[in-house]
Length: 222
Image (cartoon, rainbow, N blue to C red; front, side, top):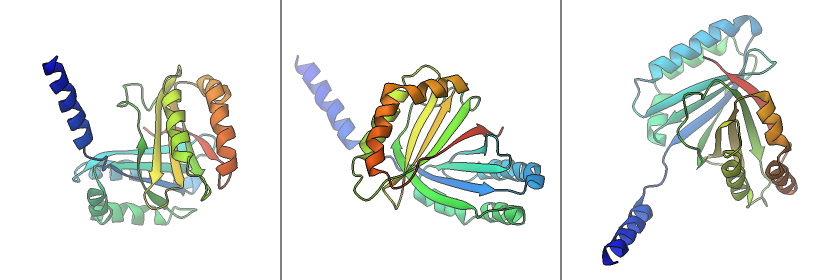
């Protein structure tokens, strides 16, 4: 009994002493001249491959909006903010931005994020499904938004066909979030949208929302 009590105390201490999640992210959107689509995809892959050599690199993902060729979303994941800042100032990052400047139709809209809630490590099927990437903007009074999004993520991860459900929170504007979902098929997305817990989330979100949900379908660029 005493040994069990000591084990429970030790476990509680370890949990209490666990360092906060320092992972740093950026989410960027950019629209490209359709004629330059292939050139930009090549530049993105070169940028990702060169970035793997930088300290703190975890992953760089890029997605193309379904039904809108050359509309891209780029999500970068770094070990911490210091590594992200060092990378952003690197020659590789600057060369990439310079390379696509003449091909852009929009600004390179990149914003910093931190973890709100992440699912389990991505499985082998990740990247093969359909992604839903949503920007959630909450009004100043929307203090319960984090809890709503955590609950939505935890429940949605249990749904059949869900491969990923992550929520990121803007580093400097706590009322802005990016939700990254991956589903096996379009049918599983429809089933999720019609689920009771999804409707409950949307009904609860509506009174505190700072604007319409910016929800878009994407495919990962391999």
